[in-house]
Amino acid sequence: MAGSGSSMLYSLLLFIVILSLQEMYRGKLASSELFTILGGFTSSLLFLFLLTFIGNYQETSGVRIGWGAVILAEAVALVAASTVHRVCITTW
Image 1 (cartoon, rainbow, N blue to C red):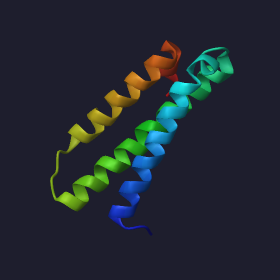
Image 2: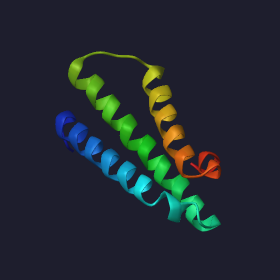
Image 3: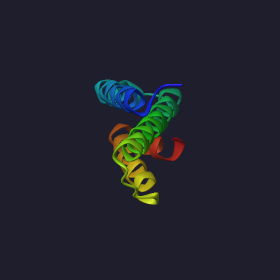
Image 4: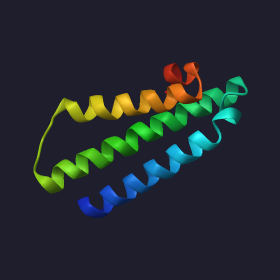
């Protein structure tokens, strides 16, 4: 099992890579129904990795914000999904 620090770093890097790829290929992701569902899936990965990052940050710093972490990660994933296609919001 990875430690909190390395897990935090890996989840942040994966979040940045997936967000960058999603924004680079947002035209392709919005071009068909199948790719729109794929855009929703990538947005759910963004939510997962951002929530992992926030949780590991809380673990290392000792600060707890409770449900605020979930709401923040969800809001960021919703905004990222909405930049691709509005159906991506409902499929993530």
